[in-house]
Image (cartoon, rainbow, N blue to C red; front, top):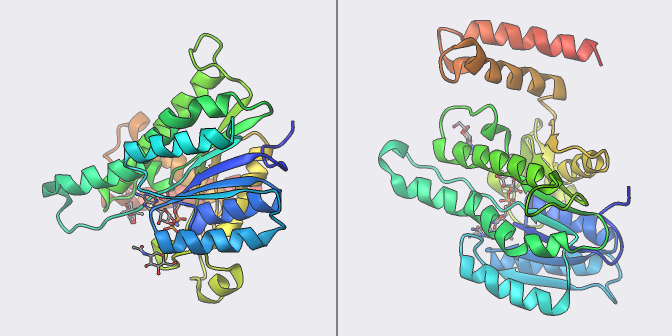
Length: 303
Ligand SMILES: NC(=O)c1ccc[n+]([C@@H]2O[C@H](COP(=O)([O-])OP(=O)(O)OC[C@H]3O[C@@H](n4cnc5c(N)ncnc54)[C@H](O)[C@@H]3O)[C@@H](O)[C@H]2O)c1
Ligand SMILES: *[C@@H]1O[C@H](CO)[C@@H](O)[C@H](O)[C@H]1NC(C)=O
Ligand SMILES: CC(=O)N[C@H]1CO[C@H](CO)[C@@H](O)[C@@H]1O
């Protein structure tokens, strides 16, 4: 199957002034793609656009930037009217912007939930409702990538709003993939592939490495266990080429087998009727650790 990463195609990426989004923008540019970059950090966005404009001869390639908040639906309609005057379709729609707010009292702070959902969840909803038609109308294969998190799957305790937004992103991505591939659905478009990109621990703005930082610089500062955003991109592009919907990235500390074992244990809470988040419950945590470690070794052996 032809790739969405092809010369002359258009990628629209949110949260593209830093981290994972910026790494994908760089990959797209190297493949000769036009870019529409959305971010609410104006200075980082400007830097990113400069770097990308020199990544490859850009004689004929456009780099459009939109300094906007993805939670603002009216900003999306402006982007649409501008973009659709220049392009008739979008080949890669990557809805990736995300953030995390800390609050000491989540259970008495509805604003913390509203804010986190307005960016991490409704930012994605706005991107989809605005641009799905332009993705469906692409002439070749096109793709939608939504950035989730392992925290939306295994749900570790501590930041309930962030984890809840990411589990909502997973649910929406699954529904979208189903509707696009199902003939009786009103949005049926089997040439559009959907991917849930789940980075592992990645050294980005979320962990103190904000902006379009070059790999060499990030490598010198990154914690040992974390991946670079460019590694997430490389892994993601490879899995997209394999046609995978779930793209669960490992990192230096956590391999694929360990993630698989943790996710299986988590799903087992429901099936076996254990307590919620049993991996972190004193009553189960030793059993969980034991089972996960054995299951991970079994999976490594079986590879
Ligand atoms: N870094 C990790 O370990 C990790 C792990 C799992 C998932 N993720 C997810 O990866 C995605 C990308 O994050 P990252 O790690 O590259 O972090 P990052 O901070 O480097 O990049 C996120 C970008 O989104 C932008 N952004 C934030 N809020 C925005 C808004 N309201 N409107 C427009 N732009 C906004 C930021 O300015 C930033 O440039 C996020 O969805 C994040 O939740 C990251
Ligand atoms: C914007 O990005 C720059 C890095 O380019 C960073 O130093 C700054 O803190 C960011 N601003 C905000 C508000 O996140
Ligand atoms: C990015 C983020 O805030 N994720 C959080 C999900 O919840 C776990 C448990 O608190 C936190 O460790 C993560 O930081």
